[in-house]
Length: 283
Image: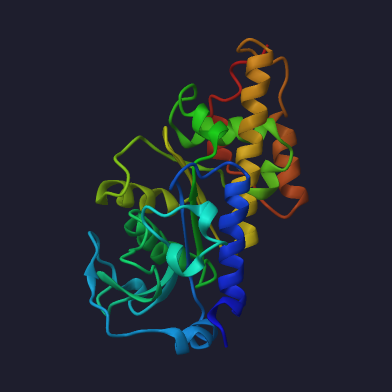
């Protein structure tokens, strides 16, 4: 089987293209990883090379030792992934200690996994354990409106979660547990990886201040949909604040937020709903 005909590879390529079309991936911004199932790995195996060297990561966790990941390439552009997959993405294997990777396929002509692979890997370990192995996707992008909110809202999970829940009716049903927030840190380092891993222990999505958004999910549609929903709510919030000269006349009420979540089988995170500062700007 041609590796590009494997459904997981096709879905990965599609998400990269969709993210570019949304305007979330300027230049080489953003990254995507997907943990292949055993069946998908076997379908891809005829194209693998196992003679390449191991490259140490800045982190080590044996939780997904031996796992195989589809990854976007460091310094390579999401807009080019559909045009030349073998150059812009690749498949890597994690070693037996969970502290190094090697390229099995793709990332041609000297490529390597995204510089934020350490953050992805630690979050994959945590979310896989938390979901019984169901979570397979980590997606980071640079949506403009959620990033803009990091300049005007307190950098807390309560402030962001409540502001988003108040702004768009889909939000309480899509992420009733809320979103996490990590203060600005240098991209690609162990500090950001650890802070993101810690936040992902509680949330499916984490805002990186002045940088972008990091989301997880069991499949490409769920992860992309979470990113899209959060960014749409942030866009509505920013536009409403601009139109109202910084003030909001009304928002979705707290009980309405609870009701929406419960109507679709969820339970809102009451700690964030009570503690958020997102609703204090309306009169």
